Length: 147
Image (spheres, rainbow, N blue to C red):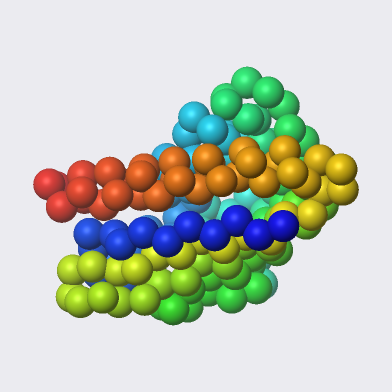
């Protein structure tokens, strides 16, 4: 199943892209739906070919296994990762960045989810999660303007 959500962000594509490099951004925009705690020496900055693992907790307290992220594309037009864990073996995430003008970017999360009989439940959670993430992104970007 596919989850897809698009929002216009109040920032340039370059500003969004720079924040995408950092684990801290994921941790900020995912809370409280998901908490990612690095396992061993998980990358704080992501690059193509990188692989990192995280203890994943839903809503901050429900253990959901070790989530692995493999970056297969990372450029100003977007990011593609192949992710998964024991509960959700396929979580293929694509982020698309399309400049609207100098200070706005069309941002799309597109996620392919395959989790057997659990897929429909994971899909429903993911729909809410990505709507939440994009609201948190906007807040993060607006806070960056104020600094």
